[in-house]
Image 1: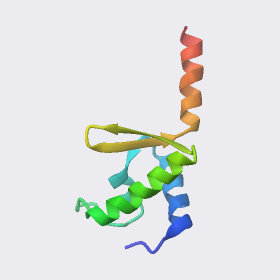
Image 2: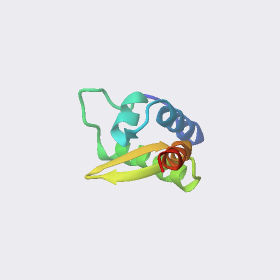
Image 3: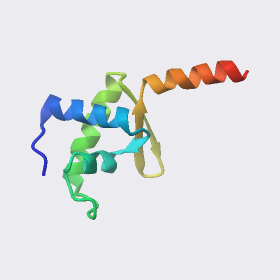
Length: 90
């Protein structure tokens, strides 16, 4: 079990999202060793990581989208790539 907390945890979550996007909450929790890969995790662990997703989205560092029951995130800078791609294909 990881001992990363608070702002340090938020920064770790952000680095994981930047490294492995698109990614959802439980994948980030697994990357942080908050629960073993073979387990689905508990609600408290998922809620903790989701809280940091929400904070990072509020800070405009990431974009989030709910796909079915999964919350998926990617870095905000990826939106710039998408915009450039749309401009080039028009």
